[in-house]
Image 1: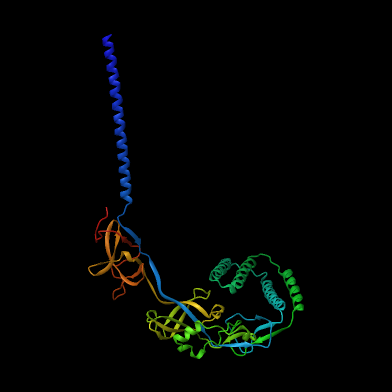
Image 2: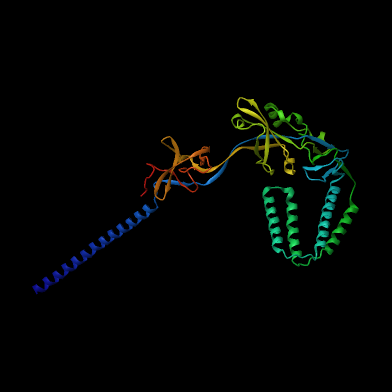
Length: 430
């Protein structure tokens, strides 16, 4: 009996020891698992961690420009007529006309003016369908050329929409329609405009029977016709524009236009001379880069008018920190014809090079440069700064006497180190 009790105790102790051993091994396995996870995380962090921050060097073009207010002076004369009513221009603004040409018509009522506009639109539609009728039966095997024309007109239409040139929308749309129709006709599509022409001609005859009286306005002399007046046509003597002073320009920019009542008989205006002048005042530092006879780019940020290359006519001192600048251009279209007091942006100079963050530029042994990463090795690259602002610099690569770029300078797609510590040439990043 006594032996049996001892055997049971031994068995119980054995079970307790086995359980303790298993519990201990569980702790060991847990610790090992945690260590494996920690090691994996460490390796991942080590692989992805970089002690430096980098930016890739891309080529950029930046402008050194100044924004100011400008006033446009043209050689303008009013086109007058003894008529009162609604004016309908016959030519687009900025179009060159000869002496005696019809430039506008004046109707005694808005209804008559609208009727006349519909008549002109119908006449254009009839002319289009007449030309379409003449193309029926003419086929071509050069389908690729026709497709290219369709794509080209669509592209021009999109660009025209993006430019904000509202006056040209109808022309772009007509060009697309005409290109598509020509392609259909040339590939055998049957289109019969006879019924459409009959309807248009009947509508035209009905409108012509209702048309009211009007007065035709003719050009007194050759020039560019502009169908509106703004009251600033006589604000400054055109002959004195070349030598306008700072005080005169400031006065123009704050001047009020001629009252509308005094311009009732003015049916538009004619710009007699090809050249027109842009007057403005800028700071002396910016003006120092301008010289008479040179050309600069002028942008019109708040207008749909495209940028122009204008000639610098004169640069005069206008005070301790300012200068009066007179620019000249001979470009003319509906957008330029509508300019008067405008916000302008004078692009004094363009710089093309590699854009480098100013935080990356350091000076080593009297040489400005940056550190780049080549694999995991740091290397020093020299820079030559062409232009700099508060954040970035545009760096160029100098060339030798044969025009070949010098080595050792920043180049395209270099991985430039922007932030880091203990940087030196040849350092290996672990």
